[in-house]
Amino acid sequence: MRVHHDGSELYVSSQSPALGETVSVFVRVPAGVRASRIHLRRISDGEPVFTSAVVDRTDRHGDVWWRAEIPVRNPVTPYRFLVRTSQGVRWLTGAGLTHYDVPDATDFKLVAHPGPPDWARDAVVYQIFPDRYAKSGEKDLPDWATGASWGTPAARGPNATRVLYGGDLDGIAQRLDHIAALGANTLYLTPFFPGRSNHRYDAASFDRVDPLLGGDEALVRLTRAVHERGWRILGDLTTNHTGTGHEWFTRERGFYYFKESGGYECWLGQPSLPKLNWGSAELRRRFREVTQRWLADPYGLDGWRIDVANMTGRRGADDWTHEVATLLRKAVHDARPDGLLIAEHSHDATPDLDRDGWHGTMNYAGFTRPLWSWLRADDLPFDDFLGVPVEVPHRDAAATVAVMSAFAAQTSWRSWTTSWQMLGSHDTARIRTVVGDAARQEVAAGLLMTLPGTPMIFAGDEFGLTGSTNESARQPMPWGSAPDSVTFARYRALVALRRGNAALRRGGLRWVHAEGDCLVFLRESAGQTLLVLARRRAGEPLHLTGLPGSTNWENVYGGAKPLCTEPDGSTIIDGYGPAFQVWAAEDI
Image (cartoon, rainbow, N blue to C red; front, side, top):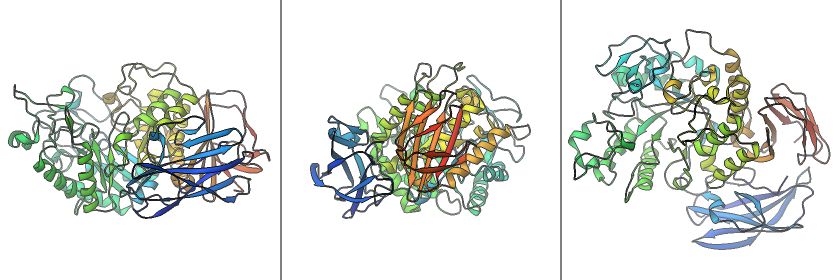
C-alpha cells in the first residue's frame, strides 16, 4: 500500500467547514514505509503556503498517521502534501503519489460553500420514468399521442417519443412496496410537467403536473406516501430549454434566443426545444419561483435534478451557467435547507462543481464509461459509447481505475461522493445489454453499491431488463410477467449491504489491486474496514500484498470462504469468476 489521503472522515475532520474554521487533515503512511518529513501545501488567497505536519499516532497495524492543520480562509481551499521518504521526495495529491510536479487541478479541496444535505450521503436513488413504471387506470390520449398496451416492447423510430403506455403518479404510489423490498430510499422522477412527448422534457408549462400523470393532486398523494415511509423524492427540471408549446415561447420573446434572420436557437438542433436565454432577469425570477413552488407544501419535493445542466446558460459568448447554478442552489436552500440539487452532465462536470451551485452531478464520465469499458460483453449488440461515435472499448482493470481516479482527482471528495454513480439511465442502453449476462451484471451492481458516490438504479435494472438504445431501454416494468428473481435478490442484498455498512456510505477508498480482469479495494471508516473484490472472468489465484496485517476477514457478500492476511499483509484469493465478494475485517 502507498502513502494515502482522501477527503473522507478518516482523513478530514470536517466535511463542510465554515470560513474561519481550522480543519485537521491526516496522511496515512503504511507500515514498512518510512517518511522522515511531511509538509502540507495549501493555497491561501491564491498563494501557496507550506506548514509542517506532525506525527499524530501509530495504529495497531504499524501505520503512522501524520496530522496538519488548515485554516479555512477561502470558500475553496486546495491543498496537497510534500512527502519525504527513503525513495525521495514525492507529491501526494488526488492523482496519487508522484515523483514529479503535477498541476494544481489535482489538489485535494476543502469546500466552505453550503454543502449537500446530510441525508444524501445515505441515499440509494431509484430512477422512475413515469410513463413506463406503473399505471393506475386508463386515460384518454391527447391527439399527439399513440397508445400501447403495457406488455408490448417499447417503440423505436422517429415517432417513438409519442407512444404512451399510460404510467402515472398514482401507479407509482401503488408500487412503492416494490421499492421498499429493493431497499432504495430516494425516488427520482423524470419530468412530470405536461409536454408533447412521453419523456416530457419539452415542457409546455412549469406550473402544473401533466393531467395524464394524474395532475397536481396525484403528485401530492405520491410525495406524502413517499415521506410517510421516511424516504425522499426529487423532481426533474429543464433549465436549458422548454417545448414550443410553452406559453413563455409565445409571450416572452426575451426568454429565448431569437435570430435576426428568423428562427430561434434550440437544443442540439431540435426545433421542438427552444433554448432559454438566462441573460433575462425576469426568466431568473420565474425559475426561482418554479424551483421553490414544488419544494413547498403541499407538494414537498426534496430537491431537483437539473436537465442538461452543462448547457444551461451557455450559448456563444454568453456563459451564465455558474450564475444559474448559484441562483437555483440558493432557491432550493431558501425553500428547504435540506434540499438537494444534482446536475446532469454527460462528460467532464468537474469545472462546474465545487462552487456555490450544484451539489453533485450524474457521473457518466467518471463511473459509467469506465465501468462499461471493463465489463462490456464481447458481442455487444450496439455501437454507441454513451454518445461517443465509436464502439464501447475493451479496457483492463488498470485503465478503469485510471479513468475513475483521474476524474475523482479533479473535484472535492464532497462533490464526488454526492454525485450519482450509475450503470445506466433513461438516456442509455441497459446495463444487462452492455455486460451480456446476469453474472457480470452482479459485478457491475456490486461496484455501484460499494465504490464512493451515491448509487442510482434505473427502474427495471433489478429485473434484468434489456435494451440497446434509450428508447428500447425505456420498456415498461414487467409486473405481469415473471421477472428475473435472481437478479432482484442480488440487487436487494447489495443495497442492504450498502445501507448496513457505514464504510460504504461514508468511508474512504484505497485501491489494493487493479490489473487485467480483477479489481480489489478497501473501504474504511472509523471502526470498520471492508475488502471488496470484483472479477469479470475466472483467472489465476490472486496474490495480494499490503492489506492490514494479521487480520481475519469474514465474508459478508458473495459466499466466499473467510480470509486471513499474514503479518506482512499478504493473502491469496481463489481465481473464480465472474465474481463479486466483500469481506469485513473482524479485528480492526
